[in-house]
Image (cartoon, rainbow, N blue to C red):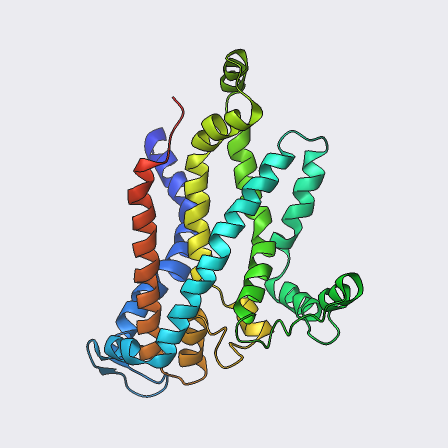
Length: 292
């Protein structure tokens, strides 16, 4: 066997685990979801082909509409604030000593189990004996709200948890982007008399725009996939005030055994996420700058 052919075979051997994982856990489930979305199937009996009826049902279903509204509102709450706080933290830590220690501190929530985080925050946000309300009472003398049972506060409360958990991941990405900006730009601007604020707006932000685009896309996708915190902390309540799209998909599939309708909702969620991703990519040409 010649060396070139041998290298090719060994190359396929090394990437085989990744390819198998991609097929088993991504491509096959994706194709299966599209196929199931056209069927009426409870998971046990014979499946019946019904075309687009599941999609028609989804658009007319009040639960789907409620879940989509809640998910969009949750994305609006988490994406801008999460990106702003991650950027602020990264800039603050960019030139400090012991940066690795601070990075580890902020990254710990990212690697912590979502269920564990949700349970801890359930105690913190408890309206009767949670430490947040206790501190509000002792420091400011005000009675804190019922964070997880108030219809208007439950989604903002879940958004706080989501932002707190994800800030470390986005911060690391911004730190990597900041480390990649050449010091020559700052030295040249200092010679021209630029202030720190002018350097931030004219150098840092524009050259950090590719990282910002990536973080924004990831943050939007994550916000649309929110499930674990809503499932553990509120079970979609009260009165479906924290009922999200993935929770709706879960409920249709594993509570009602309506796998066709659940798959149709999943396909619609996929299309919505794809639409927002393409939209961001399209308009990124106007504000994303790449260093020469």
